[in-house]
Image (cartoon, rainbow, N blue to C red; front, side, top):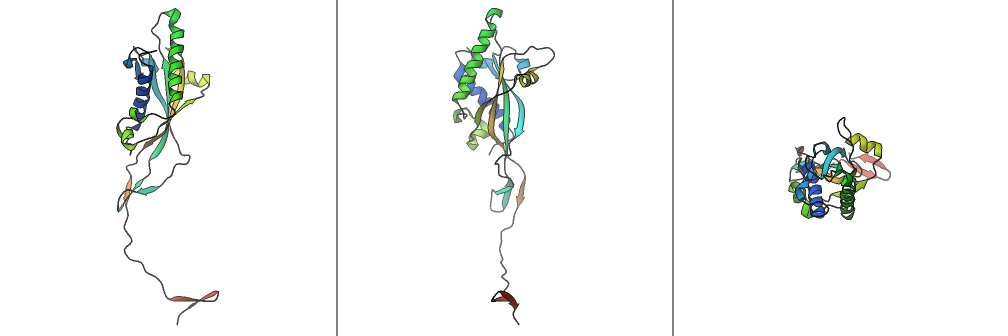
Length: 200
């Protein structure tokens, strides 16, 4: 099952998908697509930034399940991860906006074409588990995007939100259970008609 590393593994899988599909066109180098804050983009042209982790409780089974003869474990917790994808053009000023539009358009096209992250991009525990990670482009109001992006020193750059769903992290909480070895059946009563009488 997936370990606590599932969050970074999911983010890296998303980056690897974009690197595979967006290079060499419209982005010339794989390393220019990175998992980092848009405020610390450095030389990156496309940044992928995890800004929200939300537990998904809808239809998720709870409680313990059997993992051994005498051992039970709490079921995994499922999360939705929201990433901000932002374009950073290094083109001259008169070409910069068009360059950002191209990168964002290409990234959205790729993610719409991949509603589930391909297994080849999944690393670590997600790969071992055979996880099915859903990819959803979310409709995010502009004011919310500005709140996610904004700080006092940076201007907003063209961005959109993608959600990765069905990301699970295992629990380490377990308990030991005993097998039933004896069964006692009470034969002190017998049924007569609709009533029940004790034997004498």
